[in-house]
Amino acid sequence: MITVCSTEMTPRWDNKDLGIMTNYFIVPGLGNSGPKHWQTFFEKSGDNFYRIKQQEWDAPNCSDWISTIDSAISAYDLATVVLIGHSLGCIAIVQWATQYGKKIKGALLVSPTDLEAPQYTLHTEGFDPIPKTKINFKTIVVASEDDPWIPFERAKYFADNWGSEFSNIGRAGHINVASGFGEWKQGLKILEMLG
Image 1 (cartoon, one colour):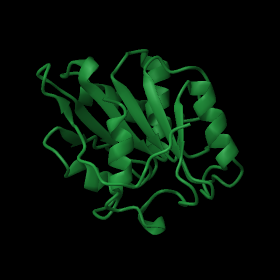
Image 2 (cartoon, one colour; image 1 turned 90 degrees about the vertical axis):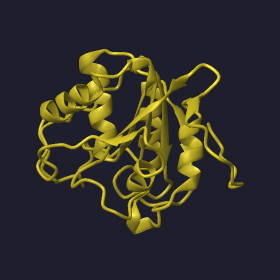
Image 3 (cartoon, rainbow, N blue to C red; image 1 turned 120 degrees about the vertical axis):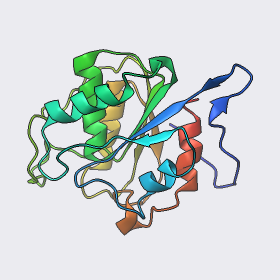
Image 4 (tube, one colour; image 1 turned 180 degrees about the vertical axis):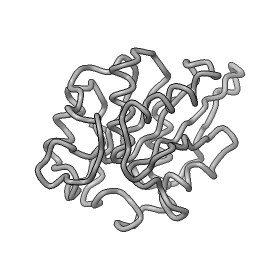
């Protein structure tokens, strides 16, 4: 389990000693992430942050979403790629990892939504069943103790199955704007753990 202190520090976004820059690709969830969302804050934090733009945000198809992820990163050295998912975006990353089998530098999976739960009635196609096999690159799952879209124990279960490090950030809702996560500096510190 990861514990992140709240003391401020400047994130390191590349390894200047080696001349290698990490490329961060943001994978929003259902409906995209608005201007006050922490993913937008991340996107604006450096020139090497890019948002993956899906064609359909409100009634997504898994095959389309993961194909878009693959196309977006295909021009980059995969050893420099880190994916940053939120909610359904996390499940898209896990589906991409399972179906494409490519190895990237890592992925940050924040508040993965549980599509298999009875309360999930939003229209999505092909995202479930959620893969429960080990992902072949480093991942960190960040979870909240009171997320309405995934019980804490279920988030831990997914992290264990995916071989992910697990970060409990306490009572933080769905880790979105509604629960106070806009300029999320702690998230940038967690992201730094991926290199």
